[in-house]
Structures are given as C-alpha cells and as structure tokens.
Image (cartoon, rainbow, N blue to C red; front, top):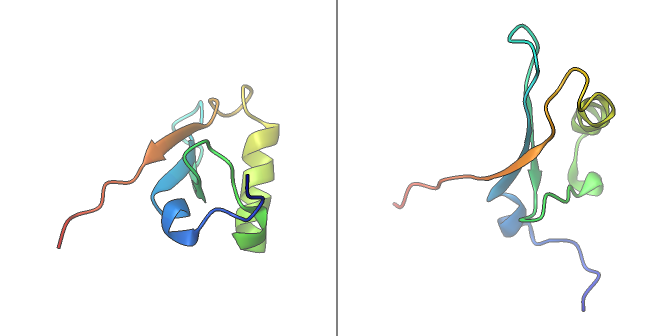
Length: 75
C-alpha cells in the first residue's frame, strides 16, 4: 500500500462540496479524491481556510460535505 499523495489527475476529477443551510451563504468546492480526502498541501492558504471554516460549521451553518464527480466533456 502506498502512502504517496493522490495523483493530480485523480484529484481534479472529484470535488468535496459543502452547501450552506441558508441561500444567502456561500457554498464551497475543493478538489479531493474519490473518498473525499483533501490534499491539504495542494491547497492555497485561502482554500485551506475555507475548508477548515466549512468543516468546523458542518451541521450548523452548512450541510455535511459530499463528494461529487466532475463531468468532463470529451474532446
């Protein structure tokens, strides 16, 4: 079993989405792997702050996070 980070091509195919409970709040979407694991080292400082903010308030101001697969248009 490898402890190496998820390859970037796999991360780009999945997003961890956090929807707000109120329509006036902002939703968040961050790259993740198929299991919802976020590579914190690959995030910008702003993305890390957004991740921790949404995670801390999950169930209070946000719904629980879900993993969605991004649809890619074939060229």
